[in-house]
Amino acid sequence: MGGLLVSVSISVMRRLPAYLHYLKQLPPDVENISATAIAAQLDLGDVLVRKDLNSISGAGKPRTGYSVRGLIDDLENFLGYRKKNQAVIVGAGKLGCAMLDHSGFEEYGLHILAAFDSDPKKIGITDTGKYIYPLSDFKEFCSQADIKIGVITTPASAAQEICDLMCGSGIRAIWNFAPTHLTAGKDILIQNENMAASLALLSAHLSEMDC
Amino acid sequence: MGGLLVSVSISVMRRLPAYLHYLKQLPPDVENISATAIAAQLDLGDVLVRKDLNSISGAGKPRTGYSVRGLIDDLENFLGYRKKNQAVIVGAGKLGCAMLDHSGFEEYGLHILAAFDSDPKKIGITDTGKYIYPLSDFKEFCSQADIKIGVITTPASAAQEICDLMCGSGIRAIWNFAPTHLTAGKDILIQNENMAASLALLSAHLSEMDC
DNA sequence: TAGATTGTTAATCGATTAACAATC
DNA sequence: TAGATTGTTAATCGATTAACAATC
Image 1 (tube, chains in turn orange, yellow, brown, blue):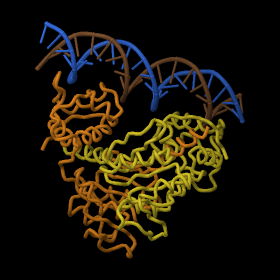
Image 2 (cartoon, rainbow over the protein chains, first blue to last red):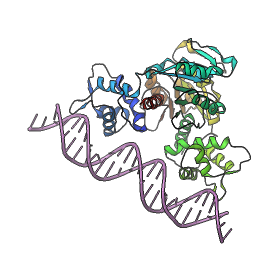
Image 3 (cartoon, rainbow over the protein chains, first blue to last red):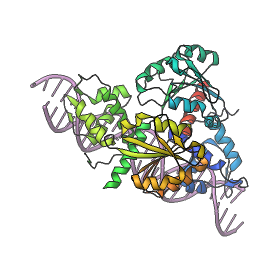
Image 4 (cartoon, chains in turn orange, purple, green, yellow):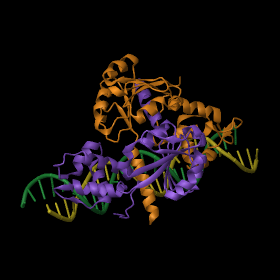
């Protein structure tokens, strides 16, 4: 039930999950760890790690380092992994269904309740027993369940329309997998999972090596 | 068959696909467009757009702007979307299969040939007719087909092992969806699709709003 | 020509790193 | 105490923005 009001830059935020993951896979008998050790494992500078950790935790002690347990606690709280964020998906294609049935997001506090699709053939129930509802039920469902997070896995052509629908249904944060730029009011966070950019970076790396 | 050897920072690279997507969805009668117009649509600064475009294309003309056609050509070539990059997936779970069957990556020049899994129950053929082979065939397959890109969609626990296998099979660029940090030789590009970080950003945005 | 737009050089901003002081 | 490690202040680096000159 933290609620610590610390604000941290986006670059820092991106590294925090990596620290947490590293700490969690340490053998259970490791009680303390130094920033230098973490940095070496994750290919980062040691001062950077110290600064990052210091900004969300006060747990570091000279000579001994950081308490692994304490750091995990602070990271999980700060990252919201101990909250239960309810979410819904729009777009029950392959990717949408894969995400709906994927249990791994629970670990990060994301609980995906259901998916919605405009295609009547998609309506039904998945392998893991989750429901796919008609898109017409979307707004009602979201306000009933007080959903704040929406995931878009539609084709690019439908994404902006769905984005608007989400904004009109009380959703405040959107995780967008459609390869397109979405516009929404500035109190709505749009987090793009930018696969096209990732692919371009892979391709560029290969081209570089050809020379 | 471009091959222009321009190198561009990662931040620029990430924006290029957004420009391309915007240009492609313009009505076909728009022949020229100004950096200012693009910038407004994508919530970017106009000078930034001009600099980005200028670094990969020489097509800008004072007073008229950029040729939409010319820009699309230059972007597609630069981003490697017109190349055919062959790739394979390891980890034929929900996400792996969704990606294997997803036709959308072709548009970005990524052709996913097949998937591999260590679980014998997963071996077989998908809805779209692609094969899932036993992991033991992986190395042989990659060298035969001269595969340079590997996609990892295994659980975190198996990811490093698969990463090593890929490196030993001639793969030069890895697209990692497992939530873990991978280490490989520095001539191998590891592109992490950092979902945990995305989720943390969504969660942080919601917490901020509670106050 | 005048005006819109590009491209470039200088200024600003933010993030990372280096140097060092503080502490157990 | 001496030494390892943290945390902080100053320096560097890179990316973005502002100002302006060049061009059609």
